[in-house]
Amino acid sequence: MKQFYMPTRIVHGEGSLSRLKEFVGNQDHVCLVTDKTLVGIGVARKVMDLLSDIGAKCTVFSDVPPNPHEEVVEKAVTQAKKAGCNSVIALGGGSPLDVGKMVAFLLTNPGKLEEYQWDNRPTDAPMAKLINIPTTAGTGSEVTATAVIISRNTKKGIKRDDLFAMVAIVDPALMVSMPPHITSTTGIDAFTHAYEAYVGLGANPVTDAWALEAMGLLIEYLPRAYVNGQDMEARENVALAAVLAGVAMDQAGLGVIHSCSGPVASYYDVPHGLSNAVFLPYAVSYNLIAALDKHVMLAELFGMDTSGLSRREAAGLAVDAVVQFLADLEIPEGLYDYFGTDEDIPKFAQSACDMFLMKNNPRKPKPEDLIPIFEAVLKR
Ligand code: NAD
Image 1 (cartoon, rainbow, N blue to C red):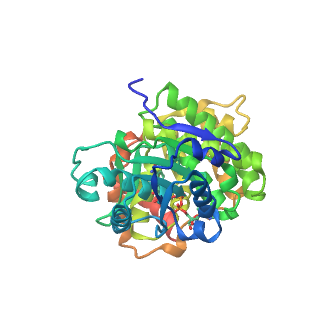
Image 2: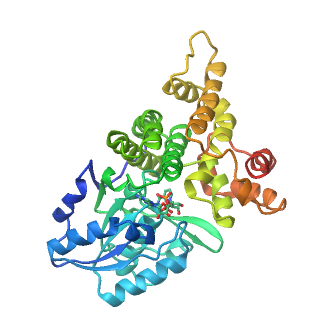
Image 3: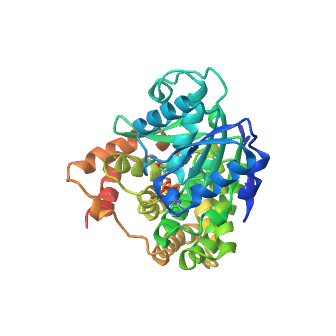
């Protein structure tokens, strides 16, 4: 193992939001970065009421859309600076969490987001205090040192050790309002993190342990959370899986799924979890022969009977299991409604091969290897 570094304190479990008072004081002026849905359904109000009880000031920035662009970060930073904020609470799915990270960072560091995103400008000062409170169970952004922001028509992660939050409060009670399709697609996002961390070249014994546990929990509990959003045991375990998978992928890296879904999501406005989910069966099928034993393990994690089979045959059962898993969660097989033109396909295939995430994949595709996959996923 080369290195494992994850300094964020994780507070997990139903009701854990009430522990916010341990991490915020009355000297704090919090910028609460969230989105309109969470304001509308009263989730943001819960946090604001707790801050008021503590005596902390709060300025709300709720203009974060799914798959945020750099302009959103700039707007939020301007508002937070003008209000005199000295700390950030990021509340929401991965989109508000990623914007919140960059707001906390740019409150104490000069210059623009793109200097850090594209030019790798070094950090000047530790970022402002950051508390992450996820309301989806998928991205794992609450525990990663990564913020994914679209800039220059590219979905680009900014990854640096400075972006780890002080604490992640993971309260499944904040997730029960997720409708089934958001529950399933965000949950599969977590599965893709764990899968890519597990089979990728950066995997190590620690990340394998986190990734395997995450996939096991998702196989057992994600269908339950999907069919009954009020099932708190299921919500709690899916939220835990997202954390485990997030840590695993942040440490071990990603691969072909995220390399393919990145270009698609940069050009089409596809929900992040869905854009990963549709590539999952193709990735498992493509990667099989490069990591046979790990795919045998995956098949067995799904409960497939591998007795008497060759390793190749047993590994192949992982594809069947994943296809069935996605079907049970009623996840669409493709992104047909989002498809633009035929010219997009070779462009996406080339971009996917050029993605740095692809370096971690156990098998290296050429653009012509990916074209049939993009055709199957995009064209009906
Ligand atoms: P999201 O934050 O974009 O939210 C999707 C939708 O779900 C929004 O409409 C939101 O309002 C709604 N929602 C969120 N919580 C809800 C709740 N409790 N009840 C009802 N509705 C709720 O979705 P996401 O999938 O969590 O995040 C995707 C973003 O995260 C993408 O930009 C992706 O690139 C990024 N990401 C970041 C990391 C990282 O490590 N930083 C990892 C993976 C993905």
